[in-house]
Image 1: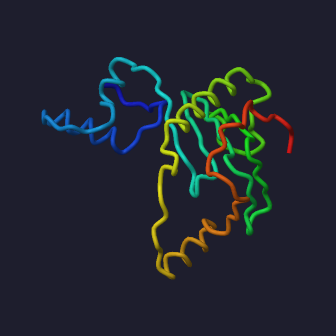
Image 2: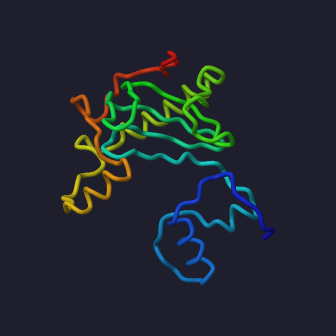
Length: 171
């Protein structure tokens, strides 16, 4: 296999799957074999994710990354408001700068990725996909120093399926 980089995201479980396959072991592990992809190309599969507190969901497919705000919220330390239903489409080759939203230039792609993301969310359990764990005062202080605390959700369910279309209104 020639050295190089992959355009598709690689997750830890993909590496584990690859190493187990290389060792010739028979193990029931998730993930894809990265060598198969390197030698044969492999089909592009969407990669879905949720942000902390379920405030945003996203999907990566090839060079494209769609981020969807699931709830309206503000951050107490940053000057930025997020609005429920707002979607932003980024070209991963350009980075994820806020001014890099490409949803106006590619509305069909944004709508397609949004539909895939909403379908993925609809398959999640009604109670949500995760729960919070109690944190020590030291852990909370560390998270706060990194800017990972201070979000104030606006209330309501964690996921609103009634939100349709990608909001391309400039903010």
